[in-house]
Image (cartoon, rainbow, N blue to C red):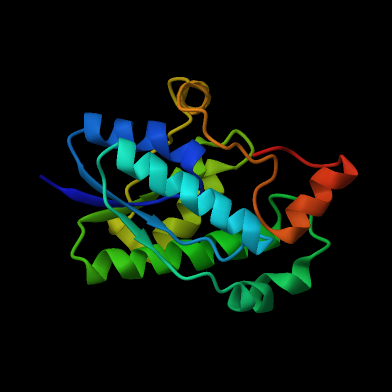
Length: 184
């Protein structure tokens, strides 16, 4: 059975993605690496939800420590970028590179991400970045297909999962607070 390491951006997005990967015959483990999430309390809340989702879906979850300083050095100068712009691309690359490295260390066949289930993310951009980072080890799956996002939301409601209203970083949060951005 081929093994895939699934980058989990949040518990809400994870449930359907885990189930879909298992349905496709993969052995799945999750990794919660999201140094972009701000503030720390929000990070902890999302991490706890991801742990719960991993538990109810019977997968192991690798948890990274919270260190937003490298993320801020890389992405902070793009604080005025619109959602989906260069800041987001840098953020995807940082996280996907870490997941790729973890997948190599743990001898996984593939890595992939729950980011592709969100209707607010451009999958072609995520795929391009992930392939640049990990080549053929990136498992290209559009979790949005076949009503993936609707199924994700239904599972979140069924399990009463915490659902955030912004992507995660302090800049996306400010965009939501101003009423000019998208919910994630």
